[in-house]
Image (tube, rainbow, N blue to C red; front, side, top):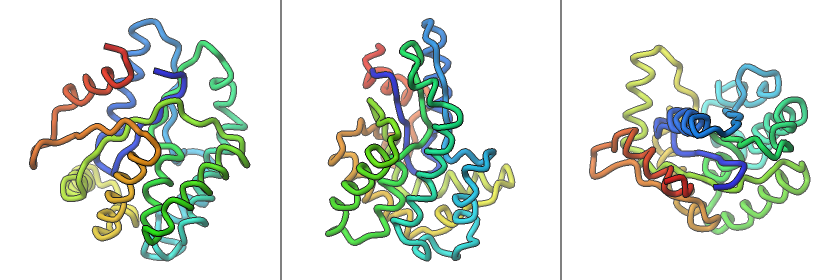
Length: 220
């Protein structure tokens, strides 16, 4: 299973829900767990991320290039790591579960580049965050695969029912389609555990998806 697990996926894929379910399960079997969710909107560390996602740096994701935007998200992780959850990573008895991580840059920012640059970007990203910044690398990445047509439908429904504002990523259907292609590439290139969250146009139940997550983590 590993000590540090990251769960990622396109918007609406159920990352938050599955992260919470995993934390509850691990606690139920006597494990000490810390859950993280990025970006950390409630902290000052996410200031630049919020400006970017709110459209203050441009109305489209492409208005901020892949490397610059990656640094915004990386700084949020670095500051929060140094001031908060480093102790949890260093505790041998604590399992850390992250809803999004560097993995999100490997999808959302990778998609801004031509495919000929994808491999070099991932090499830069892994070197920048894990070597230069010294952030911990996940032991296991679970990627919840959901096609853009289903992802965007869920995001729109959530926005309408809760009043939650859609960010510049969620508003751009072409960008989300590119993110999906980038995610499939990253899954294969980086060896992520890819879980298909749908059958045709039907989304699998949360319970069914969670059972597969447990299997992939060797917890069943």
